[in-house]
Length: 259
Ligand code: BTN
Image (cartoon, rainbow, N blue to C red; front, side, top):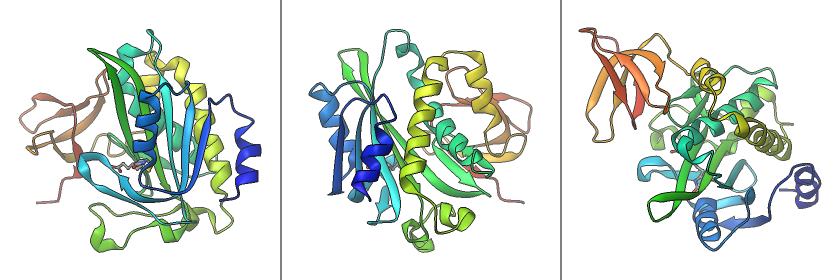
């Protein structure tokens, strides 16, 4: 990654402090430790390579050098933002999706934390929190984006088909510019996180809306139904075949296989 260009581009944003690493275990682990020891709001950890990148549900996340974006942004939540902790993943997902839409791409959010391009995953989000007793203090928003083709793991390692931005935008795609746009998007959307229009935009960007899906809840129990939208806290709203309304808090959306 071109560090001079990175500095120039990031100077256009009202960030806290920035830590850059050529290689690191996980930017989220670094950011969590930093947040715990008092990092300023909007401090950023960014790495060219991760050797122990983490995804949701203890999955591995691959970040080979020179190919991807892997970064973690620390938000020190205000008292007004704290009630909307469960919307933070939507904030990040919308900012990534919007940065792709401005490049003429059709990006969708696979609830809760993936961004898809033409039905294939190009980005994943891992939100982790730092608590002060019963109250959330900071969140770390970890974002991984497959920018070049080399960032996409081989198919046997994948649970869901993946793609890179290079496939849609060509090899001239600029990591630094995408990083800037995603961060700028988070900063711009943040004041609106508690609004109905934020929820409506998040819902509108959902993949598989109106389609039959299968969701595994936090215990791995499958729930099948038509994907309707989101609850105010960001939970997924479905109707089952027997017309019951179900909400799923944490899960992994899968398109239901045809019978
Ligand atoms: C997922 O798809 O389950 C989420 C993947 C999140 C990956 C990013 S890369 C930057 C940050 N550091 C990590 O270790 N994970 C997140």
